Image 1 (cartoon, rainbow, N blue to C red):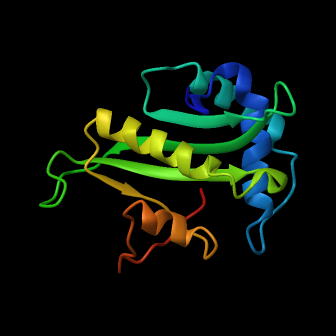
Image 2 (tube, rainbow, N blue to C red):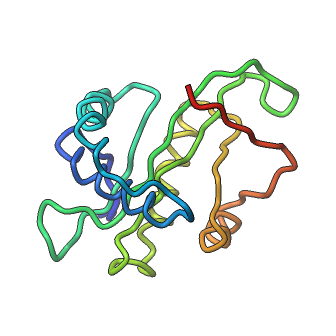
Length: 156
C-alpha cells in the first residue's frame, strides 16, 4: 500500500499548515499567518473538486492521527502550444513541504511521483517548478533541469 494519497477537503487545515512550513523556510518570507482564515475556504473548495486543475498529494503522519507529514501541490494550466508542448498543457508544482522532523524518509519524493503521474494522466506536456538549493537534487533525480527563462512577477 502506498504512503501517498490525494488530499481531500478534510485535509485543508493541515495542507495550509504545511504550506506555511514551506513559506517559513523561504529567505525573506512574510511569515504572517493572518491570511490563513481567508485562504482556508478556497483551499477546501479546490480540494473538494476531484476533476479540477488542482491536486495535492500528502503523506499522513504515522505518529499523529489527523496530521500530515508531507505535501506536494500542483496545478494544470492551458497555455498556447509550442513545438515542445503542442497541446499547451503545463503543470506547475508548488508547496512542496515536509515537517522538519519527518524529513529524509522519501515522503517528498513519493508525493512528487504521485503528482507527476497525475500530470501525465491529464496529458500535461511540461512541468515547471521553483527549486531551492536544498531541493534541487531531488528534482534533478526526477528529470527536472534548469531553464534559461527569466521569471518576473507583478502583484495585483
